[in-house]
Image (cartoon, rainbow, N blue to C red):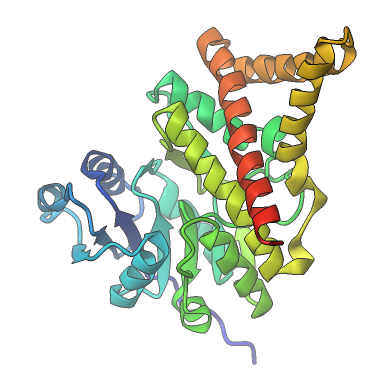
Length: 324
């Protein structure tokens, strides 16, 4: 006989570091969920200097919240800490800078009842009330023209790799894998590879999306993408069979752009025209996806270039430093 999975009892795991205002918005969105079953919320204060205790107290009478304070160890170990303390048998792992649509928990429960897997991932989107920069960053991180849709589209290239800003993990999977590593970036991809290596199945739930604020400046977005790029060569080294040529695209893009600008000095215009055509395509697509907003369209070109530059430089530096 095939053992049926235990009906999921959700524990929402939220590490937070100096983001009480954003946590307030997330808890407000959890409060109005259409889900009627029992769940609890575990908030892990990861050594913050600006704490969220007052925000937690605001919701204590309306949500089953467990609030833990610990020294700063980074997001991965903090999520593990929360899962160790949680009461549920299925963990919903969220970043503190997301907002849930009202149907989120109900959609996850319905899909897991239809097709149970020991882990899942969902995509992210820009809320209509987000700033134009946040909408542009969301476009750059999710567009087929910039990432191939790998962060959450049914038509994405390759097998979907759940990301920790919006991820589910069964208690069984946590116990088998010991959860997240201490990596500061790429820790979610590392966990996904270990899940697969243990024969545990994952899935992409398209209805389980979140509104993801991400970064609020070009500078912070650059540093975030740089960290993502630097993490990928480490993951390639740890899991050689997962390495792909497409991971080189941002680095090749930036090097090619530099070469195209240099060729202008010698009167060779065709390479830079190709780049111009590509960036124009991004601008048009971003405009279409954001109700013809010209500011979001222009910013999407800037954030896409920032993303390529950050990821590409991080990838190159990590690749060649690891060979020394």
